[in-house]
Every structure is written in structure tokens, then in C-alpha cells.
Image (cartoon, rainbow, N blue to C red; front, side, top):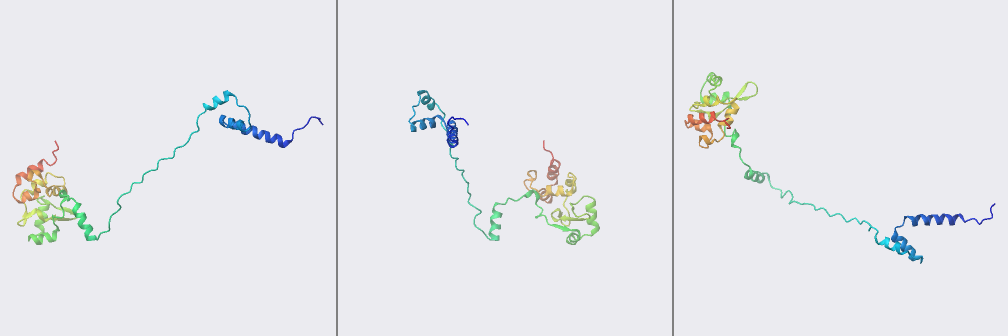
Length: 206
């Protein structure tokens, strides 16, 4: 066994731990430690300490603003809700099917006092507007009849359209070429030339 004095294991471990800690310290920490231990600090070390980068400090995130609305508003009755809805509703006069009362063949022949055969002949000859209801049945707008007959010019106007549904939608929409009123009303007033001219240019987008 060597006669050299052996270092105490605990002392060695503590020394290594301190050395490891010191190696990880920045210059400012080393200078502070040297001051505590009353160890002289070289001037070069002090100069280097002044040039060290300042630690990054994360600025607190800006609080996000929460938008708040006025809510759904007070609860109203069904009647009041309907009134308010009517006040902001814009009527679509281009599809005014409600004002054009539609009736089936049986009711129509009774109202006009005509035979079922006469009605079928008018439909097959394209003298009236017949809107399909299902595969075989039809309904008829009453506005197209005057004095128990189809209004004059209806067949001429309908020929400009690909279907009776398309023709009737155009006939009930207000039109500037017929004085702002629906063409079907102009036909009822006897203004066939104006309605025919309007129908002829209905798809003229030039």
C-alpha cells in the first residue's frame, strides 16, 4: 500500500460537484462568487462580464379581447314575431303563385261551365297554361281566363317559352315593357302586341 496520503472520498466528490457547478455559471455569477470568497477578480473578467448578453425576459401576452353582442333579445309571442318578420320581408313578385289561384280540372270546368273535353282541347292546343301536378294531372291558374275563355294572345306568348311553368312564372312577374304590371294582366286588358313583344325579347340579354 502506498504511503501517499489518500484524499477522503467525500471530499473528492464534493470538489467535483463544486467544479461542475462553477463551470456552468456565467461570468456575473463567477464574479459574485469570487466577491463572496474574497478572491481577487481580474480586470479582463470584469470587462467581459459587462459585455454579456442580458437574459431574455418573456413579455406577458396581451390579453385577447372578447367581443360581446347584445344577445338574442327579448322573447316575443308568435303573433308579434310574425308581425316583425312581415316588416322586414321583401315579397318576391317574380314567383307570385299564391295570388294566382290554382284549381284542378274538375273544379275549373265547373266554374267556367264548360265540358271536360273543351278543357282538354285547350290544353292540347297550347291555348292555356297547364301546370303539371304529378305524372298525369294538371292544375290551372284562374287568372288566365276571362269570360269563361282563355285570354287572347296567351297561346302566342306561351310559344316563346320551353314549358308552361316557365311561361307562367314570366307572365305573373311585373315587367317594364308592359307598364310595370304582370304581362298576364296586360293580356286581360287586351294589350296583346305589347305582351308579345315583351315575350319575344324575354331572353334577349344583348
